[in-house]
Length: 192
Image 1 (cartoon, one colour):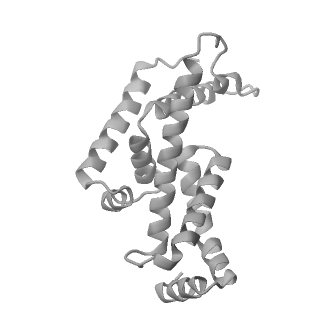
Image 2 (image 1 turned 180 degrees about the horizontal axis):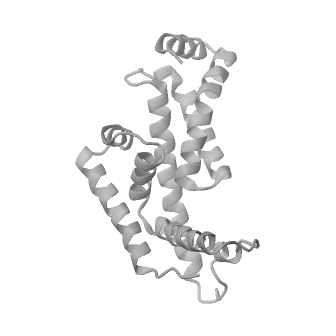
């Protein structure tokens, strides 16, 4: 969407035009849903944070200054909401798994792939499991930086602006996240 067209739609939406706001939502939703899914790994949670981002936009549209593109503002909002969600989930998981009466296995581990596969598919699944487990152990900031850099392919400067941190801090989070994933894969002997 061109900047002029976006500016016109924002102006009309400020004036109460529901169709203009709907057009903004339709324009930005697909990219935001992909970002939310990549950050959280869950479509339902991704939809929730994207919806919350658009609710925040609707509430603050009158005061939206336009210092950045609307897409940038929405990306930043979705990323921050995802980080908050990851932090809450980590806390819930810590509380749930610290209970003494919980002898059951991790619910994620209960859903094994029922299809028999070749040796390489088995190794790939085992490695994916290790990566997923390690991703859950990363801090919310590290996971967000890793996702924005390697899945969304954003430059370091854009990630820094989105998260409101310095480019050096982005590099540090990225380095620690990659090192953590690499160490987990190296430490885990994956055999069929």
